[in-house]
Length: 196
Image (cartoon, rainbow, N blue to C red; front, side, top):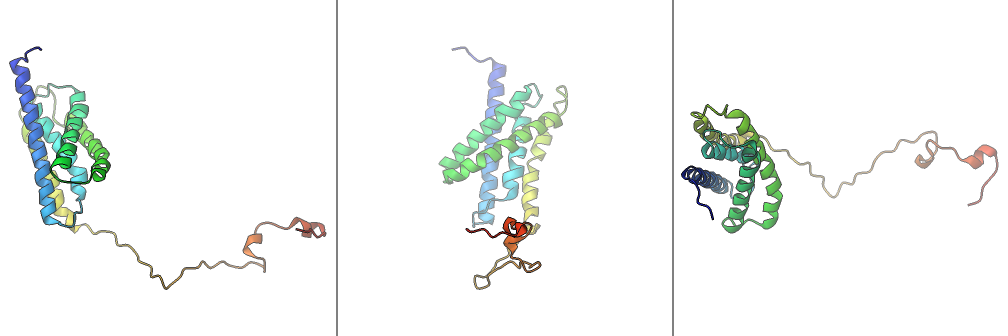
C-alpha cells in the first residue's frame, strides 16, 4: 500500500474535520429543533436550507484554495454528507428508517445544489482568503430561517361535519334527464320504437 504524501494527508484530515464539523452543526440544529418543538414536526429550514448551507460550509473548509474538481463539489461531498447524516440519524437519533429514506433524496438534491452554489460563489482559484469566512457565514442562514419560520402562517384545513351531506345541484334543461343531455334517441328520430 502506498504512503500518502504529507500534502494529501493534510487535505484528507481537513476534509474529515470539515465533515465532522458539518455533521455536528446538523446535530446541534436538530437538537435545537427538538427542544423548541417537542411535537416532532421538522422545520422547513431544516429540510431545505440546512443541507445546502452545511455542504457549502464543508466545501469552504475542506478546499480553502479551490484546488478540487467540480465533481468534488457536486458529487463527492454531497454523497459523503448524505451517508454521514443517514448513518448518524439511524444510530444516534432513533429516527424511523422510513423517515430517513424519504428525507434522503431531498437532502441529497439540496446538498448538491449547495455544492453547485459553492462552486460558483467561492470565487476563482487564486482567491482563497475569504472563502472560509463566507462558508462559515452561510451557517447563519438556517438559524435565521428557523427564527422567521414561526411567523409564517400555516394553511388551515376546512373541516366538513358528517351531519351535512353534499349533493350537487344539477340544472334541468327542457324536461329531459341529465343522462340524455347532448344526445338524441335514434329510435325517436326515426319514429320507430325499439325494444330493449
